[in-house]
Length: 380
Ligand SMILES: *Cc1c(COP(=O)(O)O)cnc(C)c1O
Image 1 (cartoon, rainbow, N blue to C red):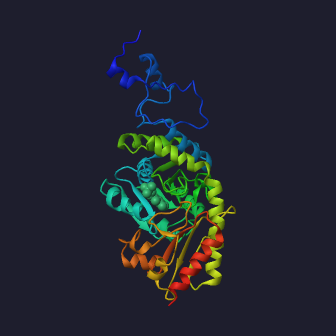
Image 2 (cartoon, rainbow, N blue to C red):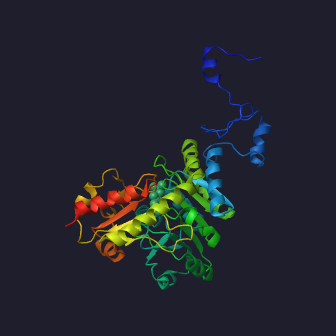
Image 3 (cartoon, rainbow, N blue to C red):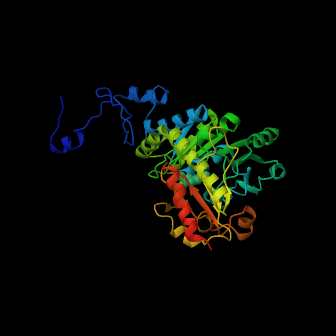
């Protein structure tokens, strides 16, 4: 028997039975919690026999994203988070507690730099910034309470390829964890876990999402480290929403074909700049045999007018992010590196002429011709 009048019907018309209709793709489990038929049924969750209870803990869509990325990284475990920043925060908190010390590079992504300087220090985790371009600086920065070396596989915006093997050797010598932000390289071109890193993080907002329509983060790594990070995600409420996870999963499915095309276009563009322009070109040459990534940074130097260059880019938009299927440009000096002191910026080589290009999937000749035209317009 079922008692259902108007107000009851209004909320009970829909009951989802995943067994009746088998969709080709995983549906979006847009639900904050999971229901149970009996107390015994719910107890099964706590005994580890059921996967889902409450979406802040986990959800089929967020699990898919963590698991799928872990597979590509060659790691045993992975979880999704609300953003790249929350992935970095919860990953660091899995490897360092108040009173501990971490060593990080000078040419860190701006948001990460601020997280470390403004938040971690206040929570009692000491941070030393070292110039990782010379590994002896890393060794010199290690203290008795150091627990973690943090780095990025490819840096922003000058695309320095970190020597992860060297970092791991140093870390092993001092029994430290290694955490790598693999956002720019993606698992297509670098797999830090396979090289020995303990935690790998991604801003899935970038290449994994790939279409600039989602903000998300991912952590992959050792099962115990990911379990620790997951407890932080739950406690801090840094979980990803099911719909965002679903979008990022859709992106993950085409990551390898997008990266192959984008990296091919990037290599062609970098070569063109090198041969046919007076711009200084930053493009990695040693990232992987599969490709060197899809970011190209140029320095217009004294030869071109920066404002006119940006005005002459036709369909190439100025956007303070990267990694979408469309080619975009950004200007590090007044975005990501706006608050970086002049001395550090100069030392890193970021100038008024630095332009970061995120190369998309368009026809390479159109990308090159559009930049050729812009450089021509901007010639001093
Ligand atoms: C964008 C980015 C982040 C931050 O990710 P969000 O998704 O914006 O929180 C961290 N690291 C790198 C290298 C990034 O490019």
